[in-house]
Amino acid sequence: MRREVVLPLFLLCFFAMDLVRTAHSIWLNLPPSGTKCVSEEIQTNVVVLADYVVVADHTHSPTISVKVTSPYGNNLHHSENVTHGQFAFTTTEAGNYLVCFWLTDHTHQAGIEISVNLDWRTGIAAKDWESVAKKEKIEGVELELRKLEGAVEAIHENLLYLKEREADMRMVSERTNARVAWYSIMSLGVCIVASTLQIWYLKRFFQKKKLI
Image (cartoon, rainbow, N blue to C red; front, top):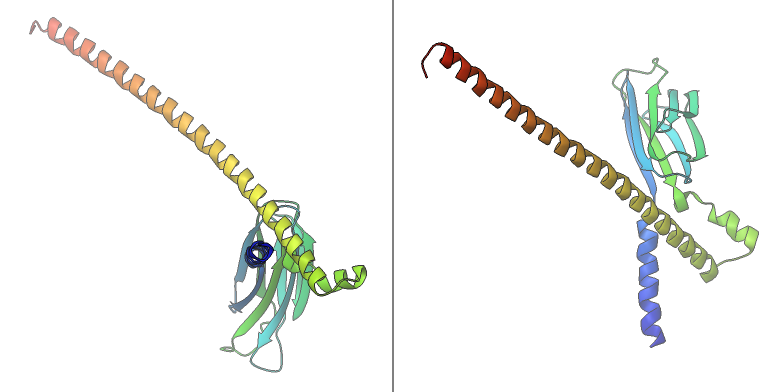
């Protein structure tokens, strides 16, 4: 009986870890002019860690500029004339965080493709579990249980965030529906008044012309 209970529990934890595994490796091809950006919607109080490196087809790696902005336009990271780098921050605003790359070295040969490899990690995927294991002297099953605990907490926070977003969207929808209803009532009232005035005017016009 105990084994029948433990097995589904571990399966649930496995799928929980899969749901909160928010690590992305992205390849971006940079144009000779212009900016290439990538964004992700992140809630508040989430750790974000990212590494980026320029990948070129020749020995000389051209330099790029990088800028990271928050949903409200705050500058979180800005580097110029670099070939690689890293940025890390904890979100204080909920919304789309934007990372933009553009080429600053225009001396490379035309036709050679310039790419950027972006390793983007958020939430539990950005946590340094090796340091946690060394600091708290845990390993093996205990370390995996700590990871599962972190995954469950992340899922709980995501559910609360989704619940809050759903409540906000429902409130906006109810307000919009109320405004549409009042607008419809006002439009109907205006149509009734306009029709009444038209009938009254036509009636007086025909009476003056002695047609009725």
